[in-house]
Amino acid sequence: MRKNNQPSKECTLCHVFKLRSEFHFSKKSRGWLKPNCKSCRANANYNPNSNRNTPPEIRRAQYLNRRRAWYQKSFAIEPEKFRLYCQTRRARIRKAEGLFTTEQWLQKFQYYGERCVYCDLELSENTVTKDHKIPLVRGGSNWIANIVPSCLRCNDSKGTKTYNEFVYGTTNKLQ
Image (cartoon, rainbow, N blue to C red; front, side):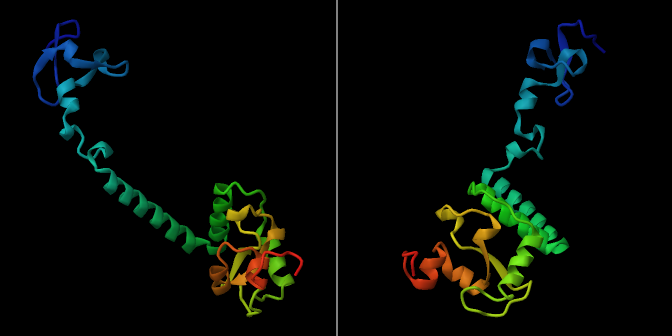
């Protein structure tokens, strides 16, 4: 057993006595030096579970799997709350102004007679989608005044068109 004032120290991994200059400095470790020598710490087998030893494409796949599992779990617990979270997140990413509550959305849905604005199809709370009259990509806001109920088919086919472009096939706002 050697003391801290000795010129050498034993590495806890390779169990070899080395000069104290072969160890990294640390305020937290006993004797102000890391317990493992520099060569052992540089070895890739030092911590096989470390993310540094995993290729980036595998790390990305692991991250996506964790995120996918979180989405599925969250959607199973409260679907409407989760849909609202996803929509406000998407609006935040696009830097769109405005927020609306679930109550405001349900009032708007009932105002339109629980029907699709575009094809007049009768909808339920499970089949309705929130559509932006002026899409977020085109500078639309996320206020309730810019949101209308639509069926999934119309919402998908509308894409990034504005309300007038989709309904009338033109950009003229006077029609």
